[in-house]
Image (spheres, rainbow, N blue to C red):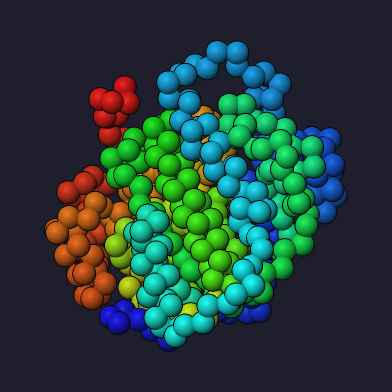
Length: 396
Ligand code: SF4
Ligand code: SF4
């Protein structure tokens, strides 16, 4: 297939090291001072105490002073509708479970075609199958709702079931599946372009919820065929979804730290199912993203937090990549009271899939000499600065 190559375009420069989910900013923002998780983590990482106190302040304030009446009840309810619902799908027996004793056997290529068709019926716009590299499996479980004394974070994430069981913070993670099925779910370009806002938060939460349900359904389908399968989604990850999707050829790792795809740019959410069901693997792709991001700094220039690097790639756990500063990003989210997706929508590749933009994406992937011009043209046509668009009437 066009753009397919033998090796992914990220440069391996040392031993690949696994990542600990306890080191993500989404774990660290929940290390409330004095909790067992916080004390254990900061004994190992005293250098992070100050920044983590700043990250935790937003959650702490909401726990200490839960608002009796929401400031914007009509739109704050979006949180519970999307992120709250997904929490129920994080249960261990939702993402994983018993495997049927009768094992269906089929030609791997035919089975891959069937699995992709089902994933699309479940809502995935893009689906690719790749190997599961052991380096992309988290070492330990880190993020909520796996804290022993998990407390709700009003108005966010109150939907964790009371009987949540079976998985704990700091559990080692071992996933030895052979294959990973990566799925991408588009976000509405207009709604995301209101970012940072409760409305864009709703839209990204909606895409997360759709992706989570599809991964749970696909995992159950494969286990019913008699093969082990585990869903990975927003509220229960066992693997790093971006490098897994890069290995499957869904796109490339971009300057912004996201997966960049030819079809959707950065404007989507991912989920994944890992499995031992024999499947035919797709190859990785070279879309020219490394060269394009070298010439384009739009995400770095539009990021209000200065979290995306303008300079060179760095070596990170054995891979050379542009390394964002996630603490700056999350502090900005906290200051806005909602997630931000400005980098996702300002990327020149993230345009709606009109005939014109498909043609531009073709040129960007096939004609390296055109890339600098395309970066300039994007600034001229859409503006070099990010400006949120007005909310649609139904949401006002
Ligand atoms: S989400 Fe917003 S703050 Fe975070 S890196 Fe992207 S543009 Fe910057
Ligand atoms: S905005 Fe430009 S630099 Fe950033 S990810 Fe998109 S193409 Fe790469």
